[in-house]
Amino acid sequence: MRYFSLLIFATFFISNCGHNDVLVTVRNDKFTIQDFKDFYQFSPADDSLSRVKVINDFIDQKLAIKEAIALGYENDSLVKVSLEENKRSIIIRGYYKINVLDKIRVKENEIRKIYNQFVNQYHLAEIVVNNDSIAQYIAKELKKGVPFESLLVYSLDTISPGGDIGSNSEFSIPSEILKVLKRTKQGKVAGPIRLGDYIYFLKIIERKRLTTPKYEEVRKNIYDNLMREKAMKKGEEFIEKLLKDAQIEYNQAGLDLLRKPESLLTEEELNTWIVKKYKKNYVRVRTVISAVQENLKKAPDLDPKFLIERELVPDLVYDLVMKKRADRHPQIKKEIKKALYSLIYQKFYQDNVLNKVVIDSQVVVDYFNAHKMDYPDKKLNDVYKQIQIKLRDERIDAIRDSLFKSLRKKYQPIINEKVYAKLLKGE
Image 1 (cartoon, rainbow, N blue to C red):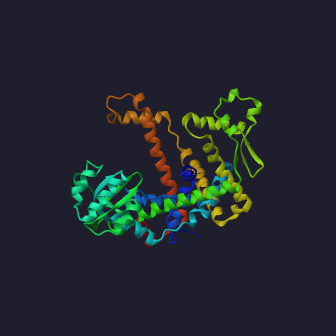
Image 2 (tube, helix red, strand yellow; image 1 turned 90 degrees about the vertical axis):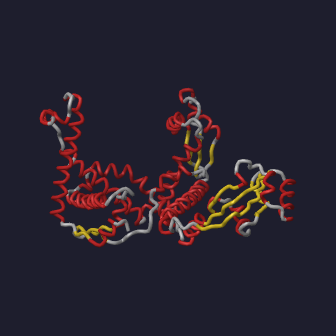
Image 3 (cartoon, helix red, strand yellow; image 1 turned 120 degrees about the vertical axis):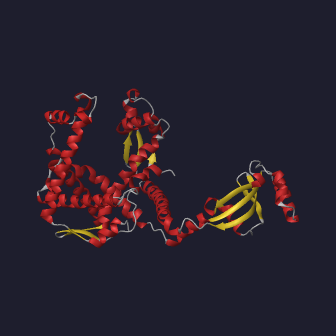
């Protein structure tokens, strides 16, 4: 896939259907399971206690954001600058999500079809040849009723005993072969079937259907894989159209200059254009050569054109957004607000937790002297940093717990116990 790595920037937006059940209410604000999943994900290894902690972290975050907004953090200069720096990429990803990812649908019958292809199995034996005349001879002999096994001497496969290649799922069998196998009875031979440079005769030793895994056990994995495949396909189509509509034109002379040392380029060469869009806008050598050559140091075989496209595609998406005024779309506004709240939380946490932690060197010395038995044969210098980090972490936990305890007391969050229990179970 030509644009695979260009599409990676947006694939994290893929998610399952939304969950609108209200998990927690903080005064007039309601937060749903989907709000939780926008920021947090359980690990498969999480036990119930770990999940409780993750949910509590989510609730604490919402309380902190509410308190921070009340204190005017929306107007904090660092928050505003950070939001502006990130807004462009948020808009680009949001537009891509709305116009590509959100339009992807995976139907139940598609999932079931893939599942059936995995559990439907063919136990096969093969004769493989690469000569038409030998294939014709084998076909005639089989038609006469000559046993398949007696013709194995003509097979190029001399490794598999009796030509037995074991059981193969329908999913793993090339479609050209599978079509013929489906028309062939058990115990009979399918072929000749040409595939590439070889001709196959396949005896169906046994057809069987596996009883495991159960459909419910693998449904989500199949769904996720289908979503990913469709996202890549739709993404490629989107980018191809984007480049076509922008009337992208490359100048090979300019691309070639990107591999020459910048110090050896003349002023005229530095002004040579590399790519043109919309028939009027030019990107010149001097504007990209440093970035391109930095990437080429890490991967010399990369095509400079690919590196240009990697930067060009987001620019084209943003141009399209501005042209259509799509940045006003409610969903994009929501993504910007989510980013704002995340920045507000980070700044609030920095100010009210991290910046309040100071571990004096004397505290480290006192701790070491009081706990020397925990550090046998160690001098203070050997474990100073270790102790300092330990004390800092303990102090952070204490300040954090105190802060969130006071916020819970102030805002009295109301937790929907039924939804809470459902989330704990991973439903």
